Image (cartoon, rainbow, N blue to C red; front, top):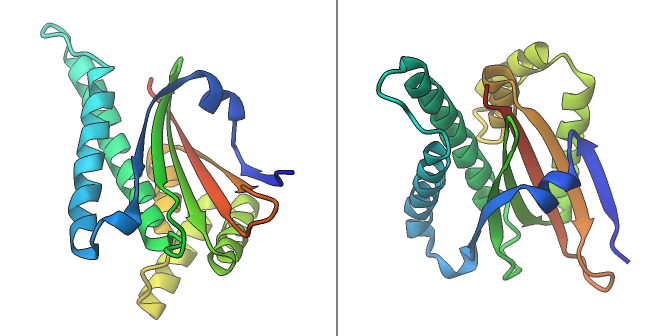
Length: 195
């Protein structure tokens, strides 16, 4: 039996009913040297595709501004999601990283699915718990200070920037894929308003 845990603002109905596309990346098959370029190409493809969903009109400057704003947010968020997935992927497993986009009325939703080991999963849960209990602005500045003091790449400022800079709603779903396995996946959902 699958064991699921929902954290934050996660909606299964978006995944089921509003998916535009999904890319699967098999990280174990990509050399470490090529992973960054592969990530950039994937982000560029996704964000060009997304921008195309918000057409521009020559006689309306607001359509250009809207498209640029959406593409900029999608680029930042998609890059952060993929970077986290590659960085925290459980390399013992040949499970793909999946990145999807969904469009539901005025919501653009970006989703990343990744396998993680228990130690990293516990750290993520602790971070999400603190994020959900904290004032986002205060937490953001605490993490900035912590990252500067520790000179750490694991500040998790990306998630905080998504909420602070783009007013995104964040949610996570943690699943045990197989009852006989230790395989855990984390689905991260980022919801953006496109108005």
